[in-house]
Length: 234
Image (tube, rainbow, N blue to C red; front, side, top):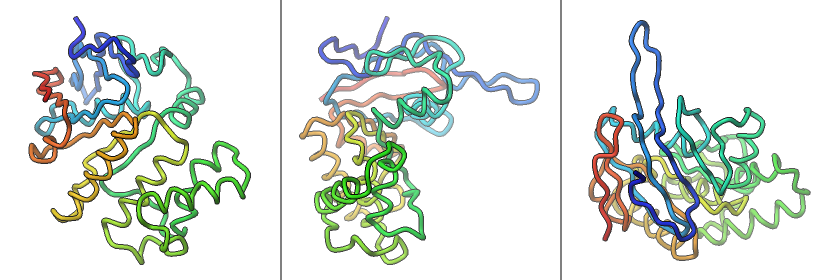
């Protein structure tokens, strides 16, 4: 049975997904028969203690890791058996990533960092520059285009990371502890930005260990020992 199913406009569907790691002579079941659906335009928080499987879940959803068995349907495409090149293409076309550690390139300006995904998509320079300027303004950093990450605050770096994640106009934004390296006030600003993007139609899936952060998401999926323990909805 699929947990949290929403048949109207689902963008992600997991069917009895297992992820097993071989650790020496032991097998560790990071995900065990996980089935769920994420609908278009929804805002989810994935929660759970360390070792619950929430990070593995996000890596699977982001096509950064492969499932051991089951099926993963992304935007109607079964990605379970795709090769590495095809998985990279799915990431570029459909997904945006926001990480706790920002993952910006220190030697590049704000504009160049935002443009990176567009380079891999083969955009012409003038078009990608215009897109980067548009997105920097959208996240409130239009006056920081020529600054490098070392010249920015933590909150500003996370805004650049969000702008970069939006460069390819993905329907789905995956956020891994997006406020983890920020103070409370700055973290709230980032969460407000994610809510705004969700209101504009983006599907947001955020991993967090903090119940207060999770409350910003109307839908919350609790993981425990590789299983979905429960789903809450406001």
